[in-house]
Length: 222
Image 1 (cartoon, rainbow, N blue to C red):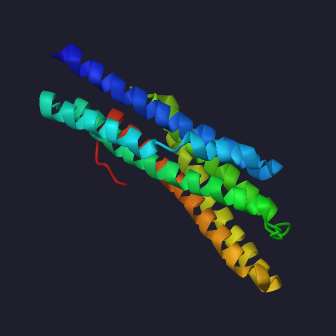
Image 2: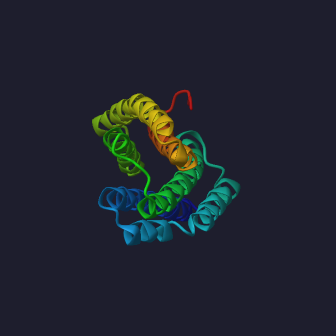
């Protein structure tokens, strides 16, 4: 029975890792598309994440089966619960990234004035990417370690940085709306997309916290 339990758990971890890596790859592709105005790359990034809800359902079903068949306890239970919640967090992240890629394509096709917004916007998007990278790296951690502690510190620093830079992006965008009222609706849509990217950073922090909880125990505060 223990051997079957390990196989199911390893399969769940493998599926979660693949989903996380695809989310990271799609984000990197979309950011590159934004910088280089590459519509094809943004479309490819969006396509990479088209079946994420189905993939999440498979992970959920495997984890529910694990709980029903093996009734794990202590650390094993923490790991199973963490995987279950991480799968949900990743699915929301992929939704945000698909929206990001969609709106990058719209932005490329438009004549939206971005010069006053661009620098802070790109810094913000890169900071969110750094948060996501830390989250993806943490998923492979199976034991308490200094590396996990460092990832925990890093993701919190990047999330705080994201919040600070987003305030600048928001200010820049509102000023641009006043300067070019004909583009107001497009700029509001752009700002909404950036808010979703901010949530990528927030959910990345949650993922690292879940991995930390699975390995270290203690109280889980999300």
